[in-house]
Every structure is written in structure tokens, then in C-alpha cells.
Image (tube, rainbow, N blue to C red):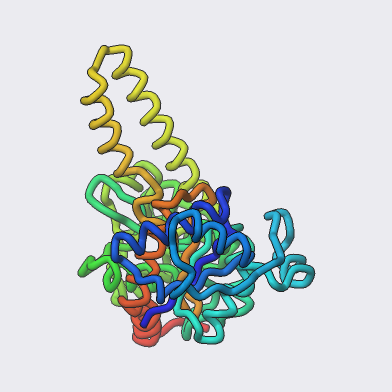
Length: 336
């Protein structure tokens, strides 16, 4: 049975949203309560379970009394507050008591704790955060969006291999197209890191379908299935995309009101568009490259987003994402 460790303390809405997400996922039948390990302050967890009418029986609870405020550095958090929900939750994965950890807590703390506690997969030097969003022609994955803001070209090659393996085996894309985020599509564009990475990706193109440089205007057009980026650029891309989508939805709603579009039609149109751009539809991002499945959720995640993240993590375990990544790195002759 797949076991999922949920960081109940994480996120802007804390235990309420996380327990609500667990309740939604159980009600949907996407997971069973016996699969969950709830990590957080025991009293708060029990209170929220009661508020949602959930019997304590069948739930595993790991008490994590050390509360994080999001301002601690990873080192401070692990030294001064060792019994925090992130450290204990990732510890469950390390010890084999859970196969996945799901958290809407501090991305920096999750990445740092997972990188230190869990070994990197064979053939991988640095993990990367892979987020899947919907574009004009379907879902595409961006890696990295924040774990490694100053990578080496070799790390970007690893991201290409991991991203292609993930898109193929977890998302069902037979021959995922891999593009390199750049300021232009021309071969000689970009800074030294990107130019060096492009040469590496070209050398290893037999291991994935490399389509060359991808510039910002092509991100949502369906030009590729996997976009490889350094963590700084990828994070800016993700945040700007979220902000732009929210702005466009607000603007469209305002224009429809001004044009006297009926309430029912306006709600239906906005609702359909919102589902396409809503971060909660995919639930979370995967930290690819570490042993075990680590799912990082948006800090603003509500109950529905957490429910989707739990389902997403369970599917990633079931799809044996890490096994496929290791197989892909073994088949590629990568420089050390």
C-alpha cells in the first residue's frame, strides 16, 4: 500500500486546508485514510479531523510540535526546531515509512531538507522542481522552477533527462519534446551557461527529443512538452504566468460586466478559463532527482489543491517515476 505523509502544518491556511484536502481526497476515493500519515501538532490535527466529522480511527498521526514561521533558514530550522513537520515528514520517506511527502510549506525548507536527508538518484547531481501547467495544446512541464537558481550546464542536462522521463512515463507523452529556456531561438543566443547547456543537450539528443532554444513567447504555444531552465528564470516564469493569468481573468470579468453579459454566461466562461489556468488543478510540483516522491504545493493551496496534490503524489509513486529516471540516466553516457 502506498503511504503518503502530509505536512498538515504547511501553507498559508495551515491545518484547516490540509485536513480539508485529505477529507476531499478520501471522499473522492482517490486515496484511503489508511494511506495517510498526518504530520503536525497532534492537538490541531485531531481538532480538524473532528471538525470535518472524520473518525480518528484509521489515521496515523506523527506529532510535530515545533512550529515553523517561514523565516528560518533551513539550517536554523533543522537545528533549533528538529521536530518540525517538514523534517519529520521527509524523515518518514527516508526511513521507508512513507513513499511520498506532500507539503505547502516553505519551498526553500522543503528543498533543503529533502536534499540533505534523501540521497540524490543515481546519475543525478542536483534535484530540480518540475511543475506541470496547461498550455494551448495540453500540459507541459517546466524544470527547474526554484530549487537550483545557479546551476551548472550538467545540471540542466540532468533536468532534460528527468523531465523527458517524467513526461513520457507519468504524463503519457510518447516522445516528449525538450526545449531550453532562452532569450531567443537562435543557436548562439543566451549567456555562457545556456550556450554550454545547449551543446550538452545536443550531444545527448538521442536520449530525448531536443527541439532547441525556446523563448518566452513560445512557452504556452505548445512548442515543447518539457522546458529546461535554471531555477531563478523558471521561478520568475512561473510567478509571472500566475500573475498574468489572474490579471486576465479579472480583466475579462470586468469587460463582460461592462458589456452586460449575463451573470450565468459570465460565470460559466470565467469558470472554464479558470480551470485551465488554476494552479490547484495539478495540485503541486515534484522535486525530481531525490529518492522518494516529494510534492511541493503552492503556499496558497486550499483544500481542493491539497486533495489534488495527494492524488498527484500517489500517481507519481504508482507510475514509478524515480525508477524511470534512473533507467534514463543509466542509458545516457553523462560526463561526471
